[in-house]
Length: 245
Image (cartoon, rainbow, N blue to C red; front, side, top):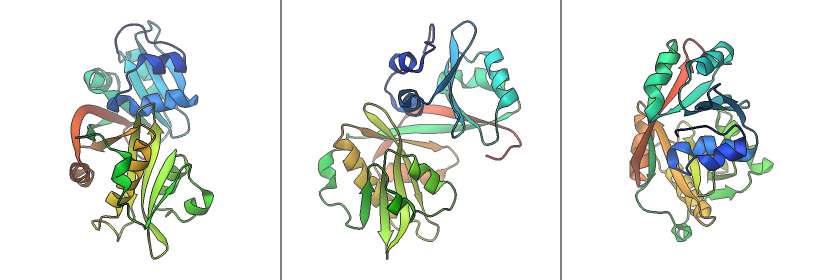
């Protein structure tokens, strides 16, 4: 966005478009948990999520603001930058790694009726229930993201949860797809079944899916294509070099 960036989370959420590339930032702003740090001239701001930790650049990539961020950024921090600000952000954070990513939207709107033939082995929890979260694998960050999601779909095989699709970032009309499959069960359609069920559930609430994949994540990009997504935007994820990410 251009011009003066609002300083309050509510006003900033209203100023940003409810568009796929902004789904994570707007979801955080709408949650009331965001910390907004604005540049002195008001032309840029950082929307920070202390819990993950992560941040989102809005407006101009102010060098002073980004240097302050770099000085105190914790381990595993990720900064999401829109396409038009990538070059300036890289210049302001020369020691950080940069991974470019593609944002996808469905070729056609998803509908609740797509749930008509849903896999009976997919369980939907909205909100997530502790009795099901306890069965989500602890590998990686699967259980953490499932626990903080607005809704999840679980693919169950022989009583075990083998794939999870989560609606972790949700706005007025969009939800961001978080998806993972337990190693040993991949390439068997489990993630796709979980996604289709959750997409139909969210469509009933008037919300469409957004998919984001880093360019080197070939498997995620391929799955997005199989599920009927098309590229609509580009973003970048910047991370402190030499830290655990």
